[in-house]
Image 1 (cartoon, rainbow, N blue to C red):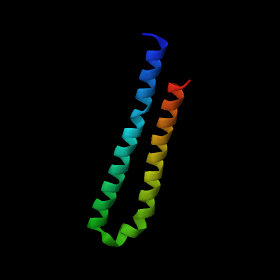
Image 2: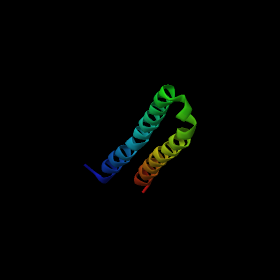
Image 3: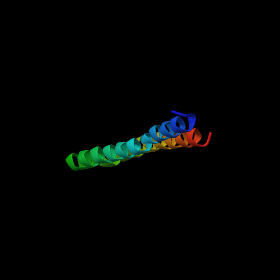
Image 4: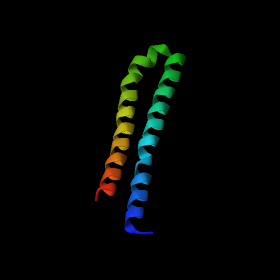
Length: 74
């Protein structure tokens, strides 16, 4: 295996984090909606926490994207 092939494989593996971040965002909002349906009076208080969780999940996805780009164009 040459260096270019290893570089492309590493970039592809690093970009898996973007798909996993999308799964994480879906999980966060799915659980938020499920909780809001069970207890609607607490939904407003938990919305901010859901948004913070989405921000963290998306940041990890963006970090994975940046690492993939750095590995690809290094």
